[in-house]
Length: 482
Image (cartoon, rainbow, N blue to C red; front, side, top):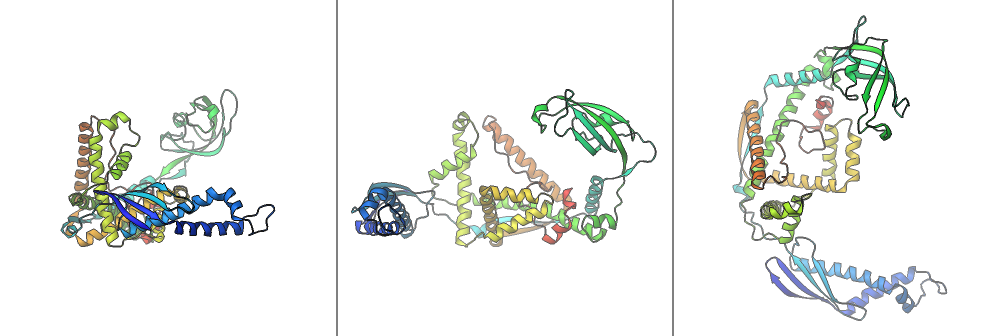
């Protein structure tokens, strides 16, 4: 193989590659022998089909396979020998090829720029530890108890009122005709929440056990049976029971029902949970401080193809008019994001940071433990979306890099109260909202990408935020449903 540099301009390089015909013919011979041993043609014994016959029937296909293999092997070798890390897929321009011919092609590649990493040790960031108020755990437990109401059968002939649990049977019709799902037995409904069909439950107020009533409602647009959606329905209801809310007693039994040993243990678990929530949110502030400083690192040149790719991501779903109007702003934003990504990636490679399958499975298991009852949904989400797994891998990779940078950077440890933590997070949220508003005004109120809101609330979807130990996660399965 002969390689010469045809063109060199900044990060863009063209290499002329010539693979001699002897090498090509050897690959072709090997491929023909492989095909001859497998192909079965009428009139010829296995393995005895003449090459000319094979060439007439399979020549183009064999040449294509040989060409793909040689191009892949030689182009990889060219990049490796010239120590080039490509920024995107290299382009190959075939000049000549064929049996008894030299293979000649031009490989055009844009390489990743050199990145400055010597200033990592000079990065400064704040690391917070929060002292949680003792009464905060009690407050959270009271909220949990409030949301876990028990109901007991009412004494006497109680009329159903808001807040009561009504158990009833129903038969429904639309225009006098029954439909799929028009019958229900022992259906439970808490009055006042309007969670069944809009306008339904208030019509049951005032009814007693054993009474009947025809409830008239309009079935919603998203009703499962499309043929009756948006139509008026009559539900013939029979009240089986009226139950009244019963105050939940916060004691050891209550704690055990939530997976704790006793009430004291539950308070410790909740305190740790609250601490983790603040810690995760404040860690995001530390990460933001680090990324802001990384933006000031030196990168000689940003590859244009990466800029275009990033602009396409930033402007996804936007009208061409809006894209073109704000192209300059998008380009600057894209450059910043690519620059940060290049620096983090360079740091990751130099420190041999890897994400294993075990890391990915561990993160998925963490998500499963945080969302009891939705395990199947989460598993199917990752099984059916390979891109989601790649995204998760990228997130974990970045996390590892940030943690390593923290270990080398200058940390300013701050012990703060819960009230101070709440104030800091609130100020950060207000700052983010103001930046969004200013950005929107500067760009004539074009649609902007929403920033991740920093909060000390737990998320209700697959997330990497929680670092709670697996032991505590198991204990607070029910607690986490707050």
